[in-house]
Image (cartoon, rainbow, N blue to C red; front, side, top):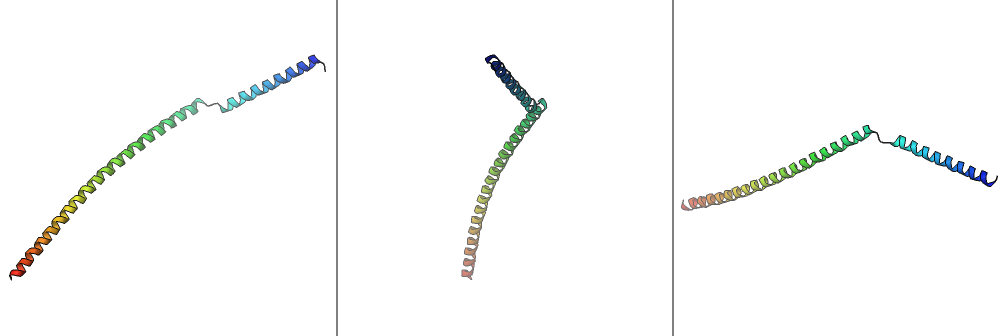
Length: 106
């Protein structure tokens, strides 16, 4: 094989390798290409996820607000109970005092 035949054979081999690489690349992109329908579905899913996150944030805010309100009401009720118990203790002590006075005078 002389020099010219070697150069031509090398050029043909390189061209065939290039053509096979290009064809393989085209096939890969053809089968992995994202369709417009898939992009639309991804957009819908992203929108649904965004709405779900907003609803979750609103629910968390509502729960935290409700918890603060209930805690405040519980504290108020506890204070009222403590005041009522103190008044009851005073009333019992006063009643006991008057009973003792009544029994002491008899």
